Length: 271
Image (cartoon, rainbow, N blue to C red; front, top):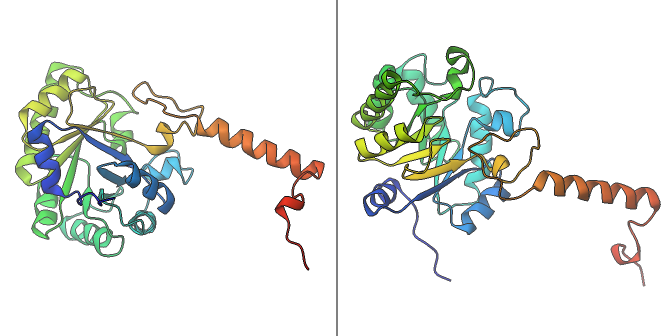
């Protein structure tokens, strides 16, 4: 079987021009990245969502640059054909341009990322331009920005009011001007995401932003149904792996306690 071509910044821009949808997923480990890549995903994001999905944090705020680098390395070992994007975690880029470029450089040099993602718009202009000038592609993020959860007053849909909607469209336009190659649009009414998608020439990747974005992204744990408690409206669960794993663990425990496992079929013997 012929290996598919590597996905790059230019690939994504061409996909937007052709009207071809972009499929993006998070991954935090080698095995998941390998399976996603074989399935044909276009972009793999090692997101700061690792904090809540894997590390047990209540928000993304505690995630460190070292943790992102660690998980990036694992995903990069899968040598994915998909483009590999690393999230810049909270306070790894907000304090100043020099910190931001160093942090982005670490994700690329130490983690193996091919691009970085960061939140914010107008106030991030110097940071974005500096990272792009350092030859590191930047993916922007507007709408519901989880690193600003305390400022936003929780995980609330953004852009419901006309004034706020106009601001989000303007923010996306600015990100394009600053040099971003794509923009994640999170937690906005579909009408606002549609306006953003039509207003800029770079791809929009939606999450909780409706059907009109150029692509979609989901946290892999949500897609797989790993948590019964967390089920936001925008998530489509393609499996119920949490329940299946629980049933498998219970069956294993019962077999061990009843002496059914291991049996001779699962044992070595000598001559």
